[in-house]
Image (tube, rainbow, N blue to C red; front, side):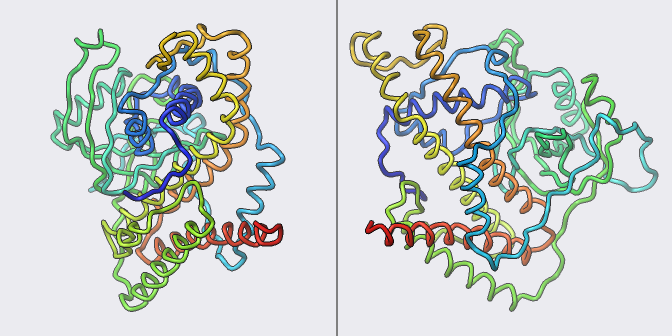
Length: 401
């Protein structure tokens, strides 16, 4: 139990997840695999009695122009960046040249690591985490056959820049733990359901067959080098670890003092490990989940009025006061359909910049080259969050709570 989530009932969580599906279906419509639900979705299922609401609609009908941040969002982001002035610039993400303009190259000679590459959206997969993918695209069906036949059971997963289509230079290495053949059960819509563990990271030197990305005739192959942390000053890192743990304690205290709707539990302080290796990555995943929870909270704030209308309609339509498990948008009245699409556009405009900020922070962790660097990045995230709450506290005190 890591997070406190105040002010949520099961209906609100159901509807929040329903509308979150609106935003996700736009992305999933062009992806090559269904990704396992995040911890956020798992919590929502628990709050909703283990039965989430799903929405049925063609992805293409939800696709629209890319929206820019609203003025209010821009101000919020500016405050977020300026809240703590003494945080060093965390750096920028390293991207490969876009595959669309790159040329195919011959493999290098000698002992060079060559590994399949599976680009998967903007969600960085962190070391020591586990993920489930459902595979349906032909080129990735072939990839899984190849890694099973070779015995390697490994492939790299990178993120994709939504603006340029470029791939991140630093990628997670996924190890295939279990594969289930489900083509018969799904009418061949899905070939495999696969469980994976992230066992490491690689730095991609170059893509051997970038033309295949657009042609989709086969999966990508890259030459890469394994990332290994160097030897470091243990005493200097120990001081950083202690300072980070102290800041996190202050953050949790401040969250509870301000009664934040999404906050770490008091008990999570004991789970905030800062040691090298698996410890720091577990803490990074905890922070990643915290970001997801905050995004869901922002979504819920935007959805409140619509939630009430939708719940009333569903209860009246059903007659017994129960909310159905699956809803088709075409079954909603025209006024509600219009509100859904308007809300989805507003959510995309307001939430997307914040989501990109969290994803950027996690990608910077992925490309960090030392434990010391990861401590600095996490420290910056904690201090920024504390700075935002300090500003909120000052405003609250100025206006008498």
